[in-house]
Every structure is written in structure tokens, then in C-alpha cells.
Amino acid sequence: MSDLPDHVTRATQESVEIAPYDASWPMWFETECRHLRNLLPVGVIGRIEHFGSTAVPGLAGKPIIDMLVEVSSLADVRQIVAPILTRESYEYFWRPCCPGGVDIGYAWFIKRDADGRRTHHIHMLEKDSPDWERLLFRDYLIAHPEVAHEYAVLKQRIAADFPGDRIAYAKAKTGFIARFTEAARLLRGGERP
Image 1 (cartoon, rainbow, N blue to C red):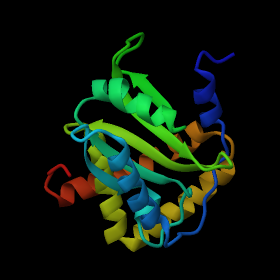
Image 2 (image 1 turned 90 degrees about the horizontal axis):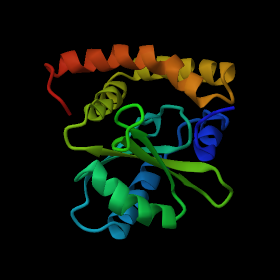
Image 3 (image 1 turned 180 degrees about the vertical axis):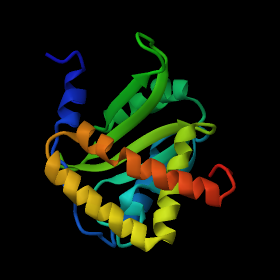
């Protein structure tokens, strides 16, 4: 029996689907940006970036728009953002900063369509979070289509290997992502995005 909350267990066991690139994905991102800016109080969020496979033209991926959203603080996510977005039917996930801790170490949301399919993953990050480095991987894939193709093949294979285990799917990609994030970091001379 898992000691995870039910919505977390359900989310980690949903099937992994890889779809061909859809030229409407950037529009889905822009629409959600406007929606979040209209929904949330001014000053709570800053920059919003589209990342992940849906942000790389031509790359197959899960048909879910991944977004990095800069927030003034993770405390504001818990106190201001989460109540607003959960009222709008977004699912709220947070990971404590330490075992048994109550402070947020990481926060994100899932948005679903009327049929319950994921449409967006919204990751809330403070300005100095190391998770902004995810943009390095995105930019590297855009600049290196041959690596993007290699990544697509890898994702298809591991999605077939782990169709109902999102945690195993994510872990199986980790080495590839780390290798090319490091390559991107070296190209930028260590400069953060």
C-alpha cells in the first residue's frame, strides 16, 4: 500500500503516450500563458517558458504542454496560486524540501481537458531554481535536430517498455537528458538560462 496521496499515485500510473509533433502545441502554450496571467494576481508570476518535447519543432512527445513559471516565492504558490488554480480544477502537487518537511521544495500543476486527459504540466519555480536549466536541453534539441531525433526514438522505446509507469519512464530518460544538458551548458560557458 502506497503512502502517497491518491491523486499522486493515480498520476504516476497513467499511461505514457508519445504523439507525432503537432504544430498547434505552441498555440496551446500561448493560450495557457494568457489564461494564467489573467487568472493570477499581478506580481505573483514572472516569466513563463515553454519547455519539453512540445517546445521543440518536429519532435514527437507526450501531447502535454510543459511550462516553467517563475514565481515570487514557493510560499506564494501554496498560499495564493494553489487555491486559485485548484478552484479551476488544476491538480496541485508539491514535494517538501526535506523528509517530513512542510515547506515546499517543488510545486507543479496538471491541467486536464473535459475528458480527463492531461493537457498541461505547469512547474512553478523561483528565479534562482536550478530547474531553469531544463531550458538548456530544450535549446540544444532545437539547435541539433539529429539529437532531437535520437531522443524521439528513445522516448518511443521507453514508452513501450513502461506504458503505465510514468516514474520509470522519466528515470529511463534521465541519462540522455543529463548528457545533452551538460553539452548545452558547456556550449554556453556555464551561463545559466
